[in-house]
Length: 426
Ligand SMILES: Nc1ncnc2c1ncn2[C@@H]1O[C@H](COP(=O)(O)OP(=O)(O)OP(=O)(O)O)[C@@H](O)[C@H]1O
Ligand SMILES: [Mg+2]
Image (tube, rainbow, N blue to C red; front, side, top):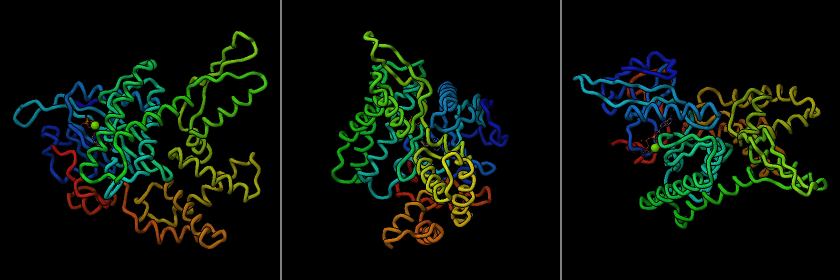
């Protein structure tokens, strides 16, 4: 057996690689929800870190590892590749397929685990929005996915909506840039896949009535096109209406993008210029929050937190110039205060930034009901006692002890719809 990549955890090499993944003993694997897949995927936990292992023929394992590595290097939301296992030999000398190891994405859920009885329209729309954004992001760097679907995506909560992460890169290709035809092909596949997945839900009685799978699949295209055009379409401006360029930049920031480079061309009339955003990076708000506070969170969560930071700064009577000082105090006074009140027991329920977002929402609702602004501290205590305590645990694995099968079931408290626990099994 050979392991390549960046497997910094030596215990990974000591897993029973001479046994087919399907037969690994229960005490090693962690029962976490996963999407439908052709290959066998299982999760193991070593030293508190959960890894996903996918058993797959060697050339495909290597290819997928390299693609994920490339995507991660370009800062795209995808699962983190750890390594590949090659030259596996079984106990009786028989050759075994290769394996791809990735880090389990904390707090992520496959789409079928995001709802308990049936997929509601609102949730479906949010899933489609997140998927469209992910597709735009990967296309911007020249990655054609070729098998974009809900099952090949993981979702994390992001201030009430979802952030999508690419999980299955097997069929993808990286090019210097994509032609219209390549993007079209990818979109067609995505729309068809999504429609198919929704039809499956429908057949199982798990799709809210009135949602049309095909229309929803097509809406992925519409959403994608609107985003793509807003981000890439050149703009013609003259001296007089050059403010439109600034407005455009602001809209891009609002959508969560930063423009790193502009291509400016003079029109033949000499009066107008064409401006096209050239290098566009997603994550405008999360980068800014990271810079100010060191908190690394999803884009919408960051937007929310930055807004709160802004009101906090104004409350303190600090100017915009003092943002760094305000940020420093905000982290201790607001963010860490909420986390301290939540306490270690409840922390695995939701990601810290999502908890903070929910506290802000909760405070808003309480204030509405009271007809007056409720103090922050009161809202935190009420939220923890009445809302958070009743939620399921969404962090991958909880509990301090390592190891036994009973441990997995005792520590995993995600509420799964009955069929989820079987999914992905051959
Ligand atoms: N790093 C990870 N973190 C969390 N979940 C993961 C991870 N890797 C895989 N999974 C889960 O395993 C499922 C199957 O993985 P994947 O889609 O890569 O398998 P596949 O057999 O290649 O799929 P397909 O049938 O589309 O070819 C995913 O939907 C996801 O739920
Ligand atoms: Mg897949």
